[in-house]
Length: 464
Ligand SMILES: *Cc1c(COP(=O)(O)O)cnc(C)c1O
Image (cartoon, rainbow, N blue to C red; front, side, top):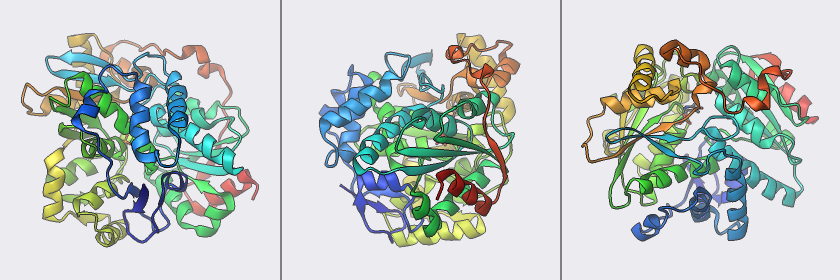
C-alpha cells in the first residue's frame, strides 16, 4: 500500500519509508492511499484475543505488504510484553455506561508507550537491515519524550534528541527523559512553549540540507505508525463492550489530535463508533474548531494537564484532508495559510462531515480538579488531570444511555502527583518507583527557542 501526503505534492511512498520520513517533504502528513477495512466478522473475532494479536492484525492491514506476518507478530508481542497489565489496555467501569480505558501500564506510565514501544522495534528492524543510523528529534509536551527515550535508548541504529519546554512539564515527566544515561540520548530544555518546540521540529524537517546531514526522523504523532498503533485500543475496547453489534462512543483527552485521529482510522477500518468527544483543556483550538467551524490559534496557557497545552493540533490536518474529500491542493493551501495567519475557516461541507463523528468540549481548570475529586469520592478511583478532562467532557455529553462511553485514561495519576493530591488529598503511588528515578542524576542542556541554535546542537550531537 502506498502513502500519500495531505498536501498532494510529495511522491507516494511505502509504509516503512513513510514511517522513517515523519513529515512529508511538501510539509504535509502521510496517510494511506486507501483505508484498509475489516469485515464485521473479522472485528467480532478480536473479542477475547490477546492485545498483541489485535495489534498485529491492525498493523498488518497497513504494513503487511512490506513486513512478513511473523515479524509483525514478534514486534507486537515484544512491545506489549513491556506492559505490567496482562490486558495491556484494560477497561474499568466508572458508572452505568461509563468506562475508563487505562492506557498507562507501559514503562513511562502514559499512553505514549503504546505506540513508542512498537515504533522502536519497527525502526530496529528496518534500520539494522539498511545498516543506517538515523537521528530522531522529538518535541514533547511531557510524555512523548519520556516514552521515546525509554523505547529508543541504547539502540544501535538511532540517536535521539528530546526537546521539552523548560519548566512546563512535571518533574516525573522530566526525569523519565533526563535520567537516561545512554550515549544515544540527548535532552534539551527549550526556553519556550511546546508549540515553539514543535515549530523548531517542523523547521528541522523543512531544512533539506539539515535533514539529510543528520538523517532526520520524527516520532511525534505526525508519524503514521503511531496513529496505527493507537487505533488498536479502540478495537479492543469496543469489542469488549459489544462491538461491532453495538456502537461505542469515546471521550478523548487531546491536544495534538493524535488519539482523536486514531479514532477516525478505527472508524474508517469498519469499527462502529457512535461519537468521538474531543476533550481539551483551556487550550481549546480543537473544541472551538468543531463547535464554531473556525480553527484559530490562541495563546498557550499552562494548565494541570500540560501534555495538552497545545494550540496547533498537527493531526487535524489529516482530518481536514479527509473532510475536503482528499483534496491535497486545498489542504496545502489551508495549512500554509494557517501557518501564516493562525486562522482557518473550515468549509461548511467539510465541517458537516467532521461533525458526523466529532464533538468538541473544552474543560476549565476548576472543572478538571472537581472531576478528580468527584471521581475519587464516587468510585474510589484516582485519575490524572488529563483523564479528568476526558471524564468531565463525558459527564457533559448527552448520549443515549444504551451507548457505552469510554474515556481514554492517558496517564497514570502518579505522573501528576501534585494535581492529584491537591484535588483528592491522596498521594498516588508510582508503580514504577522501583526504577529509582528520583535518585538518579539528570542530564540535559538548556537552549533558547531558536531553530538555528537547536539545529547546530543536533549536528554536534550527531557529529556531522
Ligand atoms: C500526549 C498526551 C495527550 C494528548 O495526546 P494527543 O496526541 O494530543 O491526542 C493526552 N494525555 C496525556 C497524558 C498525554 O501524554
